[in-house]
Image (cartoon, rainbow, N blue to C red):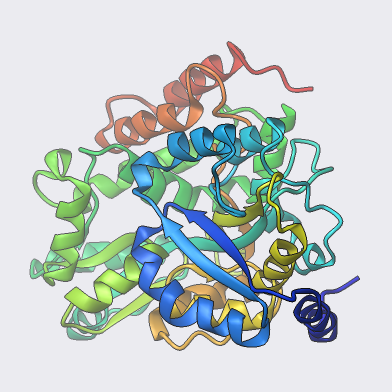
Length: 414
């Protein structure tokens, strides 16, 4: 059954009638940057349509959140609503009995299987957080530079490298801003950005979990070969270049293309004084299906020991509504609502990113579900492999074998 505004209205009317005195729900979160958004936009909007329920947003430092929320839940002092990081951290909270099972909530029908995957048990039988937002990978480019050099937005891999060649030959701009010093940058903005095009998104990711594909297969090693071809376009000294260095090179106008996550949008809007555009990961050949990493980033669940379960569920149903999606999506451009309801995004760069959902198949980062629970950790190993691919210190085939051997040492697909 689809989630409807009528159902939401009925829930709202019931909730407002049920509370003789105001109920205050406390929301735990690591998103301390969002405090103003909650205080000025989200909380007033919810409270206006839900008299009798008050919200209190209490964020903490992101680096402290995982350990702190575990301690608070264990001590019985956590808030009513718990912001959920994707996959294993939240799954551990659910298995410990700290998060309520939300599978039967009608509002859950408003989300795709991919959106819910980050907050489900491995068999997808139980969902314990409402999906809130994702980030999308692609490329942000300097429109002024493209206009100056007469460049068209590339759609295929061949066109992509032709554009890079023209930028490099002109010499005004570094073709692309990405360094290898921080390692994760090469994997997240490199391998996980272009990779879904080769392993066909969810088809390959799920096959890897099932064990019917291996990291030695061509669709998993080819992205490393493509990354190696990036090296001549990254500028002198890319080996020592940090993630903040890459951001600065682009926003200062010294680089034409930035392999990106959509979370960069708000900061780039503030710091760049040139026009920007975005293009999705190039396909191998014209007419091929496109794939994007639309990676689930944040959800919200209910403390299993809350003393206000009905009020908490009323709020969670509202989080699944079009009203919340529009507020959140426009207040935090680059963090995209995950509900199936269409949302008009006012920021043009963010709108370009989210428009790809209608044109491409969506997937999530290949290493995040199940495959990074053991040692060696596949996510961290992919960081090093992506750097080695760019530098050419190992062949794609050698990297695939090393990663698969590491995975085989602890992971036995059922």
